[in-house]
Amino acid sequence: MRKEIVVLGLGNEVMSDEGIGVKILRRFEEHSEAYPEVDFLDAGTGGVSVVHMIAERKKAVLIDCAKMGSAAGTIKRFTPADVKSVKELSDFSLHETDLLKVISLSETLGTCPGEIVIFGIEPEKIEPGGKISKSLSDNIEGYIALISKYLG
Amino acid sequence: MSQQKSKKIRIDVKHLTRVEGHGNILLNATDGRIEKIEWQVPEAPRFFEAMVRGHSYEDIQIIVSRICGICSITHSLAATKAVEDALGIEVPEQVDKIRRLLHYSEQLQSHILHIGYLAAPDFFGTPSVVPLVGKAEEVVKTIIGIHRAANNWSDVIGGRTTHPITILPGGFTKIPSEKEFKELYESLKDTLGKLKSLASAIETVAENIPVFERDTEYVSLKQTDPSVYTFYHGDITSTDIDGGTVPVKDWHGVANEYVSDQSTAKWAKWHRDSYAVGALARFNNNAKLLSGKAKETAKQLGLEQGCCNPYMNTIAQLVECVHVVETSLGLIDEVLTEGLEEHRPVSKARAGKGVGCVEAPRGILFHEYEFDKDGRCTGADICIPTNQNHANIQKDFEKLVPEIIDEGEESIRGKLEMLVRAYDPCISCSTHMLNVEFVK
Image (cartoon, rainbow over all chains, first blue to last red; front, top):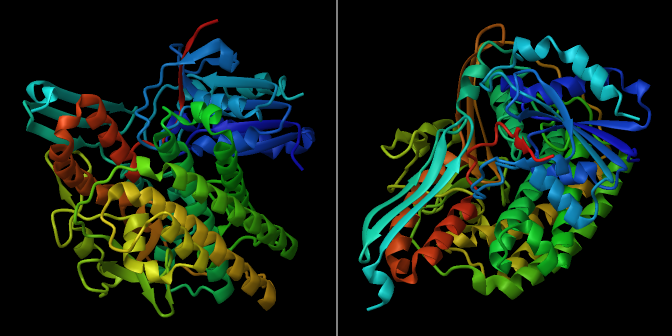
């Protein structure tokens, strides 16, 4: 059965800081018994599939790498209404998606959770490799402590 | 002559991505004379070839599943087949069947996304899928329903919707229960009905598919023992070799990868200057082997073997959706009749080199790896369908633009963009992060 709350870790864990969302998700998965009302899902770079992962839930918490113009390692909590996307897309391909557009599709379809919380983490570097930059890895405990407050 | 002919045409559609570079459509023409027409593309994520070096043969399929969020199952399966080839690992028949079921799920996931999110807005005349909800709500709901069923299908066998975790060299870590297979069967029966309604809806707007033909070489897998419409087994064939085949181990002599001046990605050619891979290529090589309902869908939508209209790739995808679902109903029946066999794969490291070839939704995909005596990867070579299609997109542009040069800039731009969308190139899928400005 679908739980009322879903936490999605987004990104690619073999592209350094781009994978921070998935890395944090893994940490939550290790202690998932502490959150019986929460589904933890690795959304990877599945793009539009997020529509289905958040459908018919009460709340969705999305953790993703985000360019926000802040110092590397900064975490910010926001809702889709707080931001506008400045991501440039050609609309040529399914291989490039914008999470905010996917949420907008979900809203249009009427299957979007009433509450969406996004945690964006500013990257230091995006390049091939599995290692997260120090400016992010040093803060992982802090990220987890902050996000866990919003899982109820 | 028309007014447009006296005008300059300057089309420069930029496709900016963060890591891999950029891809452009570039057209310069004056008074109907074409000065430059180029499909400029960035390198696809070849760095995965470096990334797997030094890793154990048991981990390769997990790493390469991150190449692509749309075709992650396909990359995992191609890598697993290559590892099995290199290390001489046997695959039990039932494992093979369940893998094919998993692979079919990704064909449906990917195709329905392509049809629904990229092509349908063009067909119905809306800029994207969001406004399409207002114009054709039932169609979008049908597409969403099929997509969700496909995702659940991948999830139940692969352990995740994307980036599967159950595939291992020689077997699976876990297979679905009998109950899960029965539920999947019911879901696929329902999906077959939804695909029928979708085909009827697409039929009503099929006139919006541009009429354009260019005689093209089509390359895909072909399986003869037994003869089936294949995505997973078989050898390489082409419409230019009269039903003949080439073993997959000789794939370098098929792709003949080369560097083009206008692109940092490698391009490919076989018997001509370019070839096409993907649903239309598979259809053109194997159409007679489609399932009954898939053949009916092809007929309904006017798709015939030998079709050389690249825009019809989307229709071939819809036909394949019907095929994979109908075929999977039979496969599930077979697996349940045999009885599920829990199989613990056993494999042992050894030195070797192997090739794995499968059909990704976008076309034939090659993975090749070499391992040392401890089973550590010492070399990798991955050739994705998108790279094999680049030269063909360029050749399509070169024939199409003179045919439509009088239509005006907006129409030309629209048709060129739609043509690229028909191929759905995999350009930037390895990263997806947000890029935002705060407004509150």
